[in-house]
Image (cartoon, rainbow, N blue to C red; front, side, top):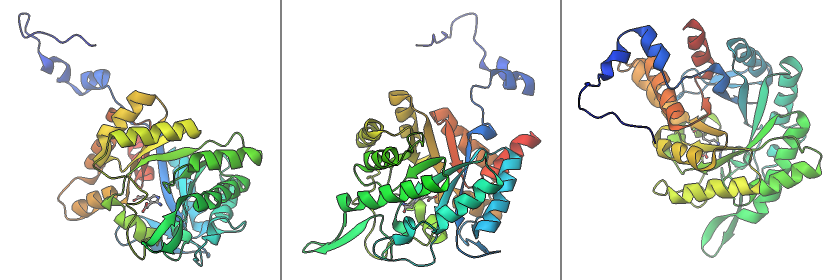
Length: 335
Ligand code: PBG
């Protein structure tokens, strides 16, 4: 426990250390470095395609050639990693595009690795972008209506993860929230010889309304119902800690809390409870809020972006996943 000063003589003056920029720099407890940034991006089929995402100004669906070029900007700015999502040419009820050898994600990974071998490629593992119904797993229709079949989904997730590792992904990041997926993915990777491929688990992922713009970007909105039967209830914190504990027990190497701003309490709890490398995902809605207010001149985009990222670092996040990663890295260079 730190010792707290008493208010008695000699009077403790908090402002002594705030007087000049250099003093403030000397005593700053938290820093943001480009080393901590991950840039999420969306790959779509084709060539020379740059489709803007209307609700996320500055974010595009990119064909592999364009994505590789944009990744070059990330490398130049000093961003060490990207998080890759795929938008397939066709969707079906088995998400076959997710684990097709020549699907959009493996194809993009191979292009990225040819051009930027050192840039870490984190492949998101989920089925919603590849399912005609937009859910994160196999849907069965029974007496009680449609439901997502947990165990039948695990095999497809594991196949997807192996497929991305084969293409050269440095890490895989399951975001589906099926129970047991980390274990299923770990076992499948190990069986195929990918014992060194780490798993970044979306461990505490809430059913959040902040994902709206992402679903437009990834064309993955569910056609019916919502994701509340598999993603977490925002009312629950103890359960989030249990989710993280399970994922670690199943073999997660890094854990994520998502969304970030609305879950700073959990970033802190997860980091202090487990001490694992912890990622905060500043999700699409967080990005969109800042962009929208900045476009109207209501907020200073750069200052607010940095302040929010700082709050995630202060809460305990080691890794910051943000759509603004490249700009942030450039701002850090400018100083
Ligand atoms: C896929 C997935 C989602 C996000 C990351 N992976 C959407 C969802 O769960 O509906 C959200 C990311 C964001 O909003 O930026 N399951």
